[in-house]
Length: 197
Length: 197
DNA sequence: CGGCGTTTTGAGAGAGCTCAACATCGGTGG
DNA sequence: CCACCGATGTTGAGCTCTCTCAAAACGCCG
Image (cartoon, rainbow over all chains, first blue to last red; front, top):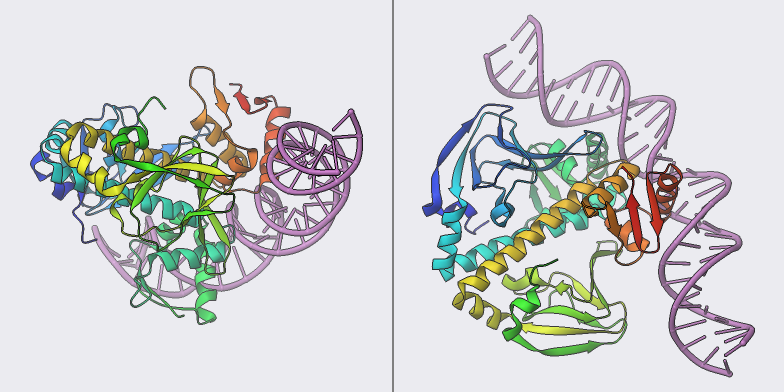
């Protein structure tokens, strides 16, 4: 991304940082939402629970990623944020962010651009998930993620995370990747997948 | 929604309307994106295609819904918009919208609020789709959609559309709804589902 | 070395998809 | 007014894909 992150955009609204032990919650569902965050170090994930108590991982934020940006105009958080690893986050005061937006049309536009990019990438994920066949889903996902020049995908995080994005069991993804490689449609290195046309 | 739609927000940017015959395209992927739209009448859907040529319906917009809002800061459209029924749309000039945002902090904030709401609802859809079991997926979807007071869901569009949101075959959804009703967990009327606690 | 998480492969069971037939409903035209 | 048509809704049956459960190899870190 050659675009500003939320954090960079609203540096002036920053109120400090926070360290989280592994397993610690940054916030929980229903709590008053006063700040937005970006992950500086570690890994924080957003979780909700079904009526039967099963956890749903909504998003996993690693260093550089924003957290809870969408709650800028909501009074409470809609899910839990739990540190998967020992982590540090930067905190940004919502009121100050709103003030900055009001004062700077330029930042305001950048902020809107930020959100519309996010909408697009969420739509892309939904697009992937509406493909029934697991194999086609993987192929489509790879095509979307691949850099157009070299048709190469950099895997951020583990294959398990990727399986989660793809809404399939990780074993299934391993098998499919193995098949695609056997067929010569892709080749793999650690953290990298190359698509052969 | 008791919130302003994109159209209401940027009424001054409106450049007129357009009528579409059934099957006609409002725009196609790759075309220069100069306008945003809202559907006044009829039904327009956004479609993309997989590498194998299978269509993926990304979104179905009915009267009152916006179209392509997320391309405000993109130069080209990323999918096709096709009228499913004879439809009319209102057109809004992107340049004018940007100008309005620059001039009015208030509208700018409203616009950001609009996008963050959209991010949340997309996340909610993703949340639903990350539930494996079709039955649990339906239950969770209904809980999310239900009005908290009366636990009632108003089905907009057909059950087939709902099945699409849920990323499952429509036959499966029919069966699951029939089961839930047999078990007494829900009751149904035309266009309405009531959840029994 | 020992424990933990990821990666990988195997086998079996079952959930959900596909194909198919039929009912229902609203619109359209003769 | 009725016949016809298409789309939606509904239910049945079979089969396949994918999930789940298992087990083992691998790498990493204390």
